[in-house]
Image (cartoon, rainbow, N blue to C red; front, side):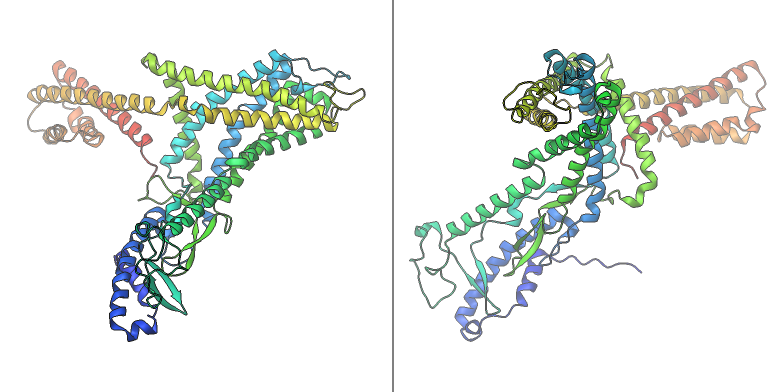
Length: 562
């Protein structure tokens, strides 16, 4: 049974909804007044219809006019989990390597020289640890994480993105609607041309004219602007911005403090075990990102009460679900069977990025910009490492009565050491994120350069395949002159080769190859000239087929996952 799709305009939607609201008794009795209200309603409908259309374009099918929106908790789970895993990998490539390097380079101390493990604040150790952590973090991001993002995009992984606040709290229209005892009434707020007052045209008996008690158009605009600003701040907090930018670093500090509490002195002095436990502690970043991702889809938390455009309010989401290819369904848990293929595609993408990074055919400008970005990450990590070591030490002094070193007999798990660990880990992550955001204009993305190289490779493979097919047509002509005309398959081969001139694809070349390899053709080669041309034909078709298959495989790898 086929589905019937009915296209209803936004004006019709708004008008039908308003028609369900009765007019006031005055409008029913006073014809001139009713006519004026009708005219105002048309102006209001035109304004509201534009906003309905904008909301539909932003939210898609999730938005239904006048109906409370559902929080997309289920749809947000997979994207939030992806963000969590991504952040865990990124954090594990930096902090643990920094800690292990500091432990290797610096003095490990104790018995009872204290400062064991990564809490030593030797300049060379903290700088070296930060630099090594910056290198590993940069390579992980440039090669692995960007590969993951590319394949996630092609797999159609959804994202939750902030909504434009003008859709939720729009500027007021020239005509306003209010409900009085369940009946509709339209009125025009006083505009700036009257100095913001309602004196011009004042008529207390005409509700459509502004009264002294009614807000002016300027006041309504100010109210909308204040509401937008408030919601934007809350939207940013949900995303982990503003003061909540401390959330992820603070959680990392808490996890690392717990790690020190549960560790032995020998474990903290051994680089490899320290690296392993630090990796576990970096799960804080993954937990933080997962929490932020799910917060964007939580009922009430990520929803606001907005004007429903028909005299009431409706629940709207602060974040909209977007997918890279809107005409295809987003990847979901139902596609779990294909997740191993995603991992393989990520490895293929990462291999291409690693190989392209050292491609001598890249321009020196490209190399120099990438090198600059790598140096940026190394410098930020090294600076953050040194600043965090100093900040952690200063915090510990608060519990040591200002003493810059450990007190006699102080345990490496004492409150001062734990506070130092918390301060150092938190500051390191916060400085890293803040400085990277501050210098993001120098960020380098290898993807455009890699795409250009792949475009060139596809074109080169196609050109080579056409050259081979050109050779094939010449060889076919010479070979047919030497072959007996009564062999029926030869005519079939000729037909297939003629098709290659119009449509170059692997199927046509394979059909030609299979016909050449058929028994009726392969057994009728007699003379040395026939055998020589026949061998060249087979070799040329196989080479052309290989080139076309390589190109098709590259195109398929770069295309959205079906």
